[in-house]
Image (cartoon, rainbow over all chains, first blue to last red; front, side, top):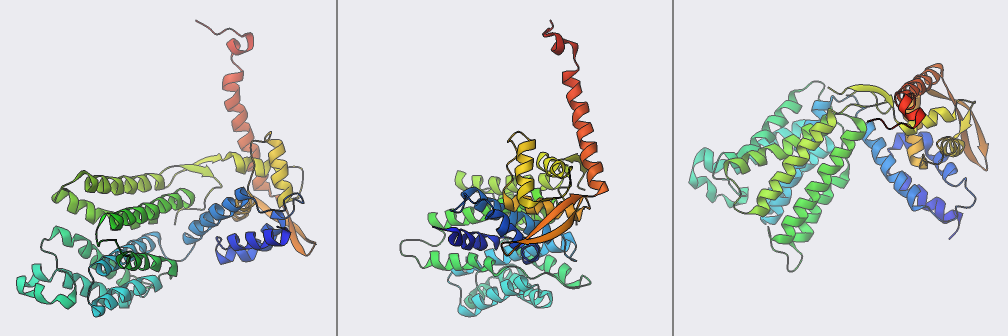
Length: 288
Length: 114
């Protein structure tokens, strides 16, 4: 191992920072990292420092854009729900056409295309609620994906439509495009569903779901602690609250499900509490 | 909404304190803040530059000059008046807080009290 390897290594992890920060400080950070002549091999501590500081810089950069916190938070919450919806449709082996609609909804939210997201969100909600709206005969249209049979289970879809309307009628309508890394969630669902021995909605599926949701919510809590913006709390509320409401109306039949919803609700509360906690001076710019 | 407590975090305090004697570059700030804190503050490089970016954004430090060393840029940072004021105010606050304990007669005399 030599300094060249160390430099390559650090440059790789420097990508954790947003492009603007890399342009401003990237060369200087590498220079400082390689300043210590005794440091021939990459330091794990410095590598972790790059990752955590990079993520923190991204969280702060998210609060610096022109989009108000509530629109950005609603956008993120709706994207998370669209991703979960698509993962479920993959597990349901929905028709290719309906999967394409779900995927298009995800892309519309990923790119911030609000005018495309609105009709797609409406189509997804109406399709999922068709039994409640038009009766049992409507359930027969299998190519439209599954239909729910009680209003409380449809609550997340009501939030989806309401949120899509709000961000579509807001002026200016611009939302920021989000990372394509989010598409790793439906890809993971696809891989899981097609892995031999893994049953749809089985134990592995539920563990993966809880793990991903927990990781995303913890990342949201950390971003909130760093940037002190309520946007991640709003996103988490949009994603978690309708499900918690459903679990309260129809209490889970086993302790595993009860623990799952309790954990999600606790994480949501923790994010909200973090957003309102005082912080040291010079650790943030004003909340946006 | 979010409240500001007006207190500097310990790493931020020592980063600003490292600049009290004049402009210092990034590596120098890491070493000096470690020395000043008795080895307690060991800033990772990524963390330091995140802090420098925020401090510059808050107007507490500015870039004094830039030079190139072995083909790499090296910037020297210095305190602004606001930065000097912030670190001084924090030092006075800490001193006042310390006096609450160190100024007690019982501590000075070694009398633990009843």
